Length: 248
Length: 244
Image (cartoon, rainbow over all chains, first blue to last red; front, side, top):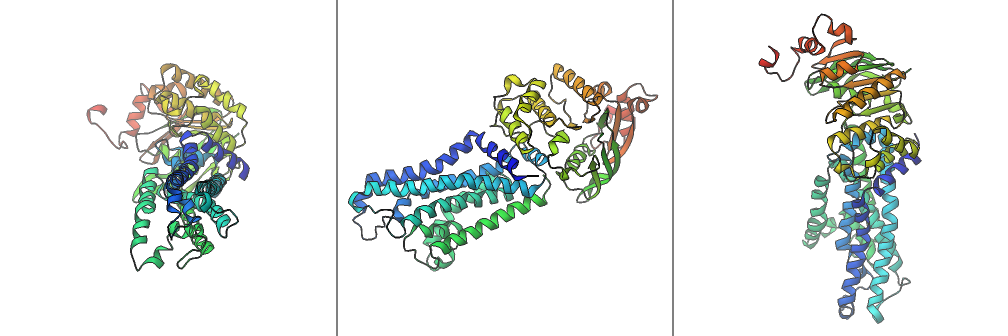
């Protein structure tokens, strides 16, 4: 069985469900939108502060937008397990489960990466445009890396969520696991003193190191991305294993 | 011609045997009715044939090969397992298209099966707006997509209107006459009596009968009566008065 037909099929599955397209667009719209809005309102006022980071500050919107990437990964994967029981049909059409899962993940990555990169560059350029004389260019050390890194971060986050969804096999289950983690547990733990070195290894924390031109803490920019990639590989591996082992 | 060959097929969920050493061959050129009380193992058998569930032991082969070994399985077996097996937000046509693409079935064929199942007018409607009967038709369209020599239909008459039932009866007849293998499960005895040439009856996961409809009815007044006599001890849930 060949990969191309599976890729065509998986792409059509996403293309044909409007909520999936809306969620994918929301990654860009929410992230860039919040960044631009905040910079338009308070950008120059904040720029006087001593701890102002023109590069890292560009990705403020990610705090809101990255949940859309989580939703996209979860919905695209766990949608198969909805009330319709579509997974049985999908696996009857593509019985080789590794091929099915690989095809799905490849299509998700191929969609999340360009949207993520557009989001990264959109955030950076949008933010700088509103900073006026305080703004910096893409030539600033770490700036280009941060924009590309934002794209990679969103791609890995999508795949991580998809992997978790394939294990949990339910949209509600996966979202109620991932949303509090990203919105609550990770930020709260980050504020607890003394465990910073451990918290830095959480997937979202590690992946966001690359947004800083001079990352602080135990993980450097690419170290952090590597740690997040490992988390993603782990989640996808668990998803694949679950699909392989369990009856559909 | 392609048969479904089931040998010593067993599926255990913990201590419960949903299917217990089932051995049966479903042959081409005739409609085989698949009967049995709820929980007898009919759906389990179909899922095992499709490789969706893993058997505890035994084998299920289609044309001598395991289903999962087919490169484009929809061209070999068409199945209706669950009337509603479609993403509710997808249109009927897109739903069929996602399946067709994975097996390199041309998009033209999608429109053909929509026409054939009477769904052409609803092709661009979302599946969530479909009635149970329309979902059944969509399931049938899915099964026909790859023009397969083997069809397995799990209770395809559920929710169908009288016109749909007659259409299904003619369709299964035609498919069998074309030399295909048609396995159809149902709880409607009168419908099976009209549709099937051959019967396979399960009870508590075991084979109770494998015979032509004529021989199965034998001395009894009807298929229904013969069925109740045979399955009297295997029904999972029974009401005493119902079988007096």
